[in-house]
Image (cartoon, rainbow, N blue to C red; front, top):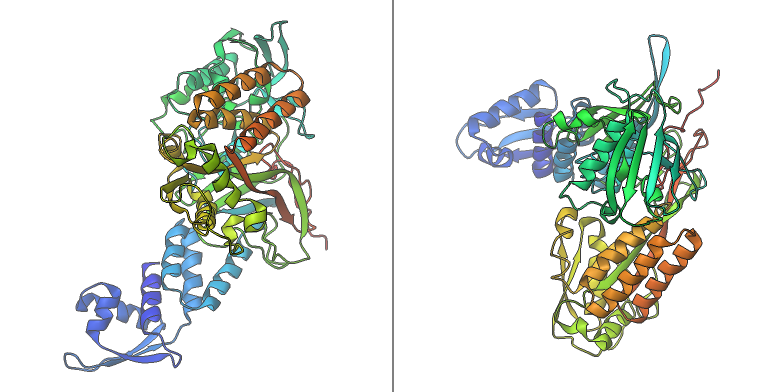
Length: 571
């Protein structure tokens, strides 16, 4: 594969429309980053493969003739095929992207990738094996419920692990998971869960109440700042009453406790996972879910159907997830490309693709840090700044698209101070869009993009504006509680006390509709006080070909891979 990259370097630097050029050995050595001797060795290997023709001229500084016999697109495709089989796709793509000058090469490579991904069938030992290959744009680091940061990691984990309870297909009900039923007392602080019998972990051990105790214990004792940690802090004790019965005591009633048990954060892991080396469980997770992880590389992860899954075997036999740090994962192909499933397809997708809305959407917003001493402590300045971001002042839609605003006069207030805008990489384009809009109104901004882990630290309290998002899915109330509890940390004491008081009332409210009204009340309070501005909201979609059957969604709004199937072609 290295020789392929070296060829692309040469072609990028010395390729001509005529396919031939005059070049010195010094120039070749500089291009390849090696000595004269190694450059000649590389040229010899390429000539032997029929990729180039090399006619040397004797004498230092004399120009030799270099002719390219192979097309750069063909060499790039060879490199990608070898990279995927050798699990080095990311490196190959980076090398190709660095030296691909023509858009035609990128079009060729993207077309090949679209054919590689999607549904594929092969026959092994007279059995049909269905494999689904999915591209992701971010490298997945951990599937440990304690350490996940990315939504895609949560998606994979939701197919590896199970919780005590699960979301119903309607999205609003809670149904049995690893526990086939449960009871609670009149105070709603004592919960007793009755486990299913003979549920197997992927490594063959049988689930018992001690595994549940261990799973909650590692959550309660972790120093990791995890999503929904406010629920975990409300747990007083987890105790195994017998091998199939677990009792969980809460410090106070919390009506979000049961929905929390449906999330991938509350997944049950085997108690012997503490024998794994530090951090290794995230790369080699063991759960009870419909798929087990059988291969984990830097760029590629392979899931296989777990045949003994207690709710029935998945229709798919294998799922390959490949990190593609290029523009392929968000694009679609024409029918016949076999790219059957695309999270969040682009608007330019072919009309022949069917579309279905998942019951989720993403809301992007800006919030103000009024705890920091600065211009935003003045409500008039906050109102002025957020007014610059309003739809009336700056147009409608996705800020990351670089939408231009109408010419506006400079806004009033403190325009001299530099406003720091904090965000994480997935929302960097939106933050830059916010900065651009504010700059057109006379405000100087600096965007600070940090990792999700660093974002949990003091960086938010050191910034003036924070750009983030809310996934509005079946777990929206859990996410809203976590969001407002976090936002309250960088608000003035008066507003913080108001929000935290409202959240306490919401946590005790058994009616989901009343809880929703409580959350809307907090949103209205923050908007009226110029603490919060909603940028836009976009629904999540999944595009699929008509051959896909069983399309349904889990609580993250992703396709539920266990139910997905592809009918065989009938002769």
